[in-house]
Image (cartoon, rainbow, N blue to C red):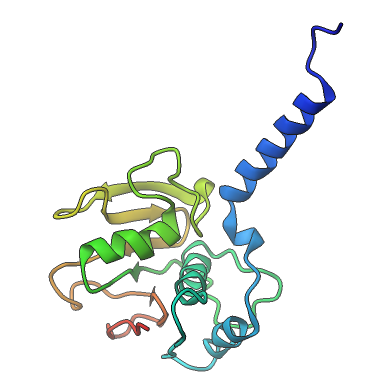
Amino acid sequence: MSNGPTWKDQRLQLLQQQLAAKQQNRLASFQPYPQQAAFVELGFEKRERLLLGETQVGKSECGSFEVACHLTGVYPSWWKGKRFDHPVHGWAAGISAELVRDVSQTKLCGRPGSEEDFGTGAIFKALLLGKTAGHGVTDGYDTIRVRHFGRIRRDRGGWGRRPTGGGRFNPHTGRSVDPVLGR
């Protein structure tokens, strides 16, 4: 009988490592549906777009993926939409702080309240430099710091405080702050 790990143990360890790597770099594994790819591509020529669809068909996933690409500067080879070659700021906004935390923040950063899961969203762990706590909702972030390409800020006081490079579903250059298009 051997004292070392069996081939099953080695295989299990390898699969666990692969799963962890995939969870910490979801940008690499995102494959858009045709409608999502068309939405992203429209960003090349249209400043405002709307991704409209039924519940649970991938609208938030696509929007979060696009925001993560713009904030990090990491674009897949198939990307035909707008690209930012400079740092941008972005906002994640919603009807309430709870919805921002439960949808946008979760899709971008990972499960709220879990340090272990911070970096398992669309923005991969290696590019998340930190976060500041929000006010008024448990485990909500006010600001996240993203390596190289800026911040996402949830602002409770209105749209006019800082120029943005993008927002959920509405990336733009920041000359003026437009409300973010929702679903």
